[in-house]
Length: 565
Image 1 (cartoon, one colour):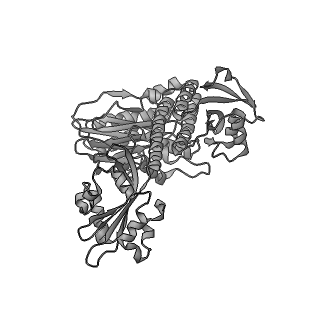
Image 2: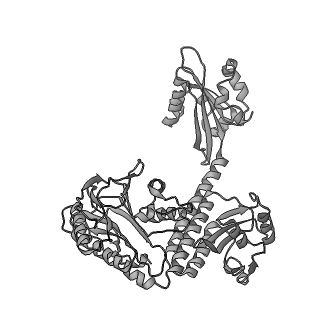
Image 3: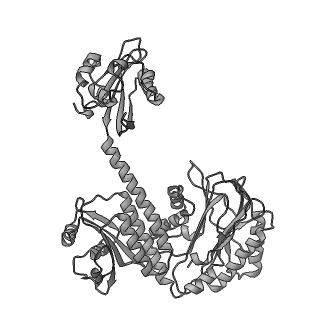
């Protein structure tokens, strides 16, 4: 009898004659899976098959076990309670993966079933126990999970590489090596589009002579295939479906390949590829790495190539807009700024995290309408004024109101600024904040869905008398605060649909368990992917997670100019 022939569902419909213990012992004595029976009002051990005894390693003889109540037989109180629950409720219980260590130390995994068996009228149900060995399945899963963890760790390292340089060639060469090693590929390569051909520019794990290899657009080639498909993909001999895929593997004598198109302004300008000599199975983690690699490389190369000429000027201007401490005691912190393309572009986004007296910190973010040098001047003025006022004004509302007066007096009629300013007590978690026409912050609390904080107030510089209010909330340990500018919400899909608040909340929910340091990048890549790489406005994101009560040591400040090129 196979192990699956006696499932919990099957036992519920068998004829009453089967419940005779003698009948059970006759049916299951020679079964290849362990089985045993506990009976009577005290649930005493009354029968076991040979496989069950062999599994125990005969450390205790059969006659020493039989007649023993379940609580005496099992030192594991949780397992004993399952027998009792089944006996007195009549409901079967299944444990999908139970870890068992044999007397000689070998580890195995079992699917355990506890089945109620009718006994005497005055007694609880007897309990028939049996197990199915699922060791091979569990070990395969654990091995796959370990591979997935390794690939996700590699993804993080590759992201650091992508963001660590503005040299396109340096990024591609370093990522090619790191990704080839992370994926366990036998060789990797990078091909550039050149007129009507694909040319191999870099190789790793392949003879250097392969550099310069050329395929015309009419040739069947790996980079040409990636360009036709238009997305990252992984194909092996065991899952190939298209004729071209089989032909490519036969042509190059390989068992599988993965291809990552690299895009600039929506056009595929390069392809990074990886090849395996033998057949293999690609999992979700492989697909996740390839997809993120596609987004990260396209983003990195777009930035590197479009801003090479204006990098020095742009860095100087933006470094005044984006500052934060190197660390904030009691908090994890991450921040990101991405500017839309354009020669001489200067954005209006700004943010800052300000150490305040006592245990308080101030956090501000804002957006000035326009992308001109004049708007940049107003951005710097408002940001620095808010930072200065935060050091001595009593409330966020006061800081916002003073900034509004400044804009009304000094800005042109068409100029206005949206802003958020809040203070957080790092000891108590109390947070007070005020908004001026700015998108509401998101708070993700442990065990709850991310939610928007209250909002009110018009933008700074709006004509007419404006009253700004103070709001309060509390950040408990582990709570996450996300601030952003409206460029994130206004990222649009190719069909014109905005990314919007609901997708933002969903994205925060998906990434809430990540370190706050990485959350801004994860949210940005969600919007970048949604917009197919075409963004219409700058995006700034700040993430703060409360982690502990600080000791009150002031942290040094870090100029972020080098991080916003």
